[in-house]
Amino acid sequence: MKNQLIALAILSGLSLGSLSQHNPAQAQNRNLYRCVMKNDAPTTVVDTPRGRIDLIVWKNELPGGWSPVRRCQEITKRFQTFSDRGALRYVTSGRLNNQPVICVAENRPGVGISCRNDGLLLTLAQNENPQRVMEQLFDISARVRGGNPITRNIQERTILAVDRFLDEVDIVEEGEDVEVIDITDASADEISDLMDDGETPNQPMVNPSRCSTPTPELQPVEQ
Image (cartoon, rainbow, N blue to C red; front, top):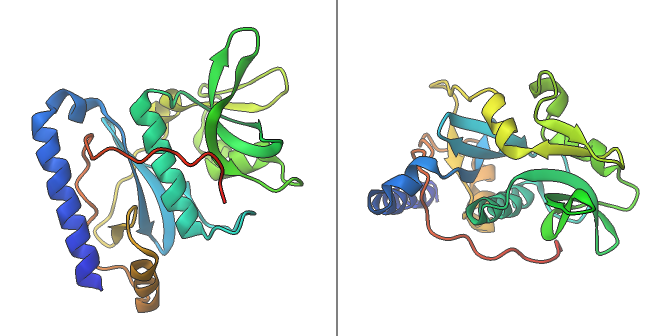
């Protein structure tokens, strides 16, 4: 099964590389979001022109019945879809379908920055504090200095300006002893075998690239 995961990473890298050759401008500027297993934790990372950033480490169970691994996979794909559309400008908390959520937001005339109707990233339980969850997910207090990427709307909800956030947070410097495997598209069985092995295959993640195959459309509601 390790060999299958390694083959998956190699094939993904070949596909990304071949597409990049045909679209050099897109490959240079496009952020690539991936779910990886790193230090025994599923982690959403983003490869930017500056380098790689650990965006969210999925350490804890959250309401909704999704494991940290599945949450990492699904929400990472949502980040990529919004990024590809040019719509990933703000992330905030709010309500969609009468549920508290973390969402991709837009600046609406007369309303200000609020959730897009199709902007669901993460659905929370009714008793959860979306603003607190959001700040914990992005580790805002530890990583943002001076508050430049962070503002608040009239409801005092935190608004994360994604581009400024990615410009300011620290780039990851991977040591040789840090094992990373891309599990964005890995099946449940592959991940189960990986976890049962108790180690991550000694195979580097796909080389950073800004061009990949299109990401499927977002699901309207998290199950």
